[in-house]
Image (cartoon, rainbow, N blue to C red; front, side, top):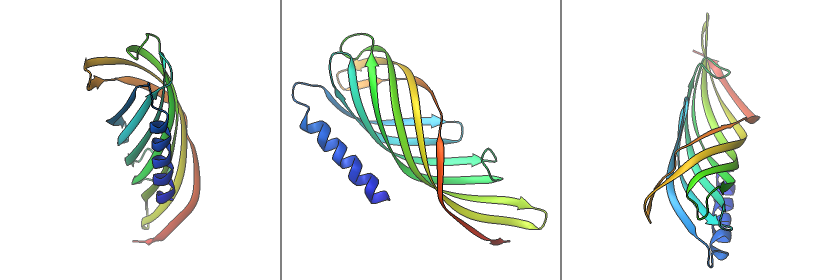
Length: 169
């Protein structure tokens, strides 16, 4: 599965660069932080017109749900791919923007349940799809340095193809 995600990401990047004549192409690093995890990633964006930008991102999710998930303690990691579109209200990609994106993550979660008779441990591999809407503002400090704070809201659909449960400790 990881090789499929990597292959898809490389293919999308090559497609973006193939059509980048007379358009702005930007590659950069980003960090997404949320209450139960962090996602460092590499992002590529390509202008489609004076207001619109298409984007792809490859990220690595580091998860610490603690007891906010299905089990008493959940930690995990996984690779993901994001595809999105960003609309800037001002020309040439400055100021306020509205974005729509969809993330696909393949995560491995190590979990524990604390029972009266001991601890139950297991591993769950999950596929997560997350459509999201984002509102942000682009601050340009130079041609090569941007700060783009944003807030986002969405939902997720989780698919659980495989659960491995280990014996109680």
